[in-house]
Image 1 (cartoon, rainbow over the protein chains, first blue to last red):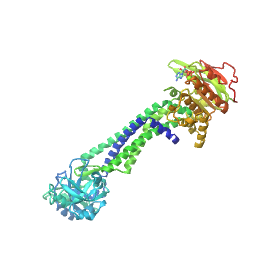
Image 2 (tube, rainbow over the protein chains, first blue to last red):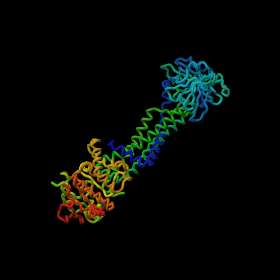
Image 3 (cartoon, rainbow over the protein chains, first blue to last red):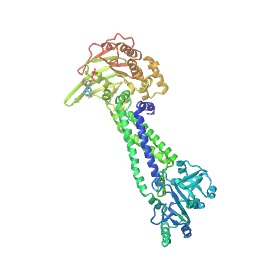
Image 4 (tube, helix red, strand yellow):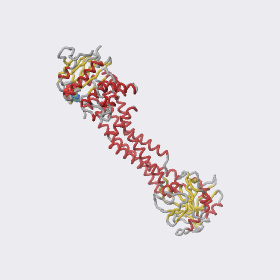
Length: 380
Length: 236
Ligand SMILES: Nc1ncnc2c1ncn2[C@@H]1O[C@H](COP(=O)(O)OP(=O)(O)OP(=O)(O)O)[C@@H](O)[C@H]1O
Ligand SMILES: [Mg+2]
């Protein structure tokens, strides 16, 4: 069968305009499919971090946007003393855009020494000592660095905040890579933010074995009478609530992904059927020469598969390239969802296109294979 | 034993309440190495008979033995194998594959048979030489004249050395001179390679190169003259 590959290729080349249009259509659809898949993947990995289950977020009660939550910084010290708490880190959150955005830049200001205790970050450029030494130093995530073309040593501004990049980090959780970590004190003293003594949230890392839900109640109870009441939730719950509407949207986007696959199916199916109809006589000639119907069937299937796989490879490849180059992330209320590209995503995409190529080919291939020879020879 | 043996062959078409019977109880035997021409009015069933012998059409009744096999009993796949191994088909309108060169068109039937690529190359080169188109081997059908296309068609039909070559008005679309060249070629192949030919034609001159001439009239096969050694009997 494979020795007829040049013949199949030549037929595709003969109708190159049609082939090109179909391949482009399939590529565009698979591009969208991959982008949708990437954000789904990012969504799924949001709460997958190793410490998410034993991490709590303490927020001001009845506040949602990080811009409006203000807690006393010394709440962190109080919480740290509670039994079962391993670490309590005061965090000031500042971002360029509180609404849903594709280019969200989120600053987390926290005591520099505590950063490495609660985050699993690896520096791909720069070093930790220079981050800890310099007041306005920051480490930025790899995705953000890609998107904004940032590198160590550079200065970087969003609004009134200007930091010096001391390092670029990669994280196990893709969403982390859209963050900028800087010093708490620096962020608190930035003009326009001016919030000395207050923080946005406190991140609490529990010791192994403590019950997260019970601890949430304990903390909220502790500050019930305090100057500011708190609302404490496990980090996963907190993040899911923050991205709430976005999550619905992303969930819905999977139908867009399915629609893309169906689009490729109809596109490739139509083209292959047209190609077969154009070659009714040619297939009859082949059968007269002694090609079996199975062989004709196979040739049409291969043709369909080539078109589909080429489109898929181009679209998926382009999507992965664009996504990893741009490091896009969507975010809402300070929580980001990264577009995660992975070999798995490419594999799923290519598997989908193979299946689509085969399914799209069946009807045309069957039509071609079962056509009556004499009748087809008479047709023009 | 004849190469082709046909008994009680009938082909009917039903068109509504109308019944068309292009072939009615036809019997025929063709010897190996013979050159048979088949004439008859348009619509008399010549192509139908040819297609049945070539194994691309199925009869309503009767048997067709070719090289010892009753091809009316074969499955669709077996028939395809039968054609690949035993039948060469020359079309009136050449029917070359437009995306393939002359060389590739001729090689195509060999790809279905267990030949090594060296053997394929040797065979294609021999038949290209035989039809006088060695210098045109990498030309596409659209770059060839009608006569040249038909010679490629003939080369494709004989390259696998089939038991029988059927030709449906092979010169029907050619001018007189080209037509003569093609007929010469067929006659030479029959004489030199001993290939058995069955040729449908409307042209008396074309029919005259045959050693045996048949006529179909209203579905019935007639043999107007007793078989004679044609004037072109230079071969076997
Ligand atoms: N699929 C079909 N349905 C109905 N009738 C058919 C069909 N195919 C062929 N026929 C009829 O069978 C008869 C014989 O056709 P055939 O093609 O064998 O004629 P022919 O002798 O080759 O004619 P020509 O010299 O014009 O090529 C014709 O009357 C034709 O109309
Ligand atoms: Mg005819």
